[in-house]
Image (tube, rainbow, N blue to C red; front, side):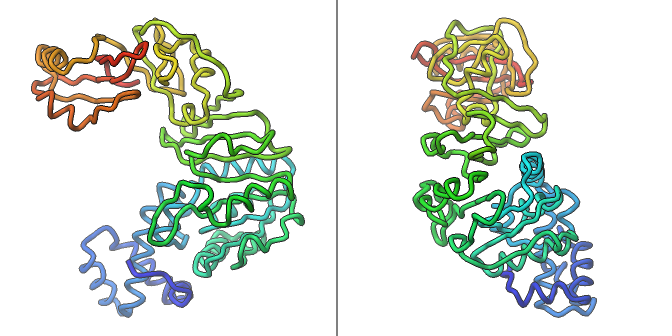
Length: 394
């Protein structure tokens, strides 16, 4: 894909560029050379054709994050990968508006997803990004959405923003580095973690968007840690600071639109494997709310270190996938292979926690054959490795 430049963005926003974007939308998804030829046959130059086709392709991919709004937005591949999903940004903006936030500094605004959501909830946003192309794209997206009156975009270093002037601060530090890809150590964030961690002391109503694997020990005193999943995919952690904090820990599931809260220090009961096993949503696991989840369904753990929950009777819950346990045996490749052969299992869905086995290699070693499908959970019970045969997930 060709790189987006400020010049190309300006070209795409001219009447000729808009015509090229409309034409590209008609042919995107087909063979690239044929699509490029089709646009040039309509009289568009090679540079404009390539830029329009790039945007059409990115817009098609962005529809999963942004819905119909994606059709009028401008993207880069990296920006799209890092952008907040619209449903997550909208929920966050609604919570900020409900807390009385009227002005917001958005540090590291990226393509503007969170700024757009905040503006739609009546908040005036000052959005900042250090990359000039990204800032230009965010400004273009604000204008395309008809929200330029509520959003100002500046290309600047986030550390230069006088955040004390705003009701609240939203910060999304860059977690990728050129040539290295994704970074996991907060010390490698940009702006630095020291700057990010200091924001609540300057503007108490601060929200930090962070990687889901963030260490709980970094949660500022009194802040709320929220882990968010969409359709079962864990997408982010957010630290809500100062007056915005409502509970110590929160697991938010969007899709079923459910939330689980707690202190994150509850100890779950431990007992035998039951007739039903629950694989909690990753937001529940990452927020350290497995014990609270177990309590909510009257469940128990079979091993205090493993985040599988068991009940004797089925319980409907949005916070986990439920499987029926049909067989439990101490793990033995030979015994498991014989049992699956006896039951004619040719397709095996494997889940694991507390096991070092590699599912793809295990499937090969089991030499599966037959018309039937089954589930297999590799885990531990009282420290010992076990294999649980299960029904399909519910």
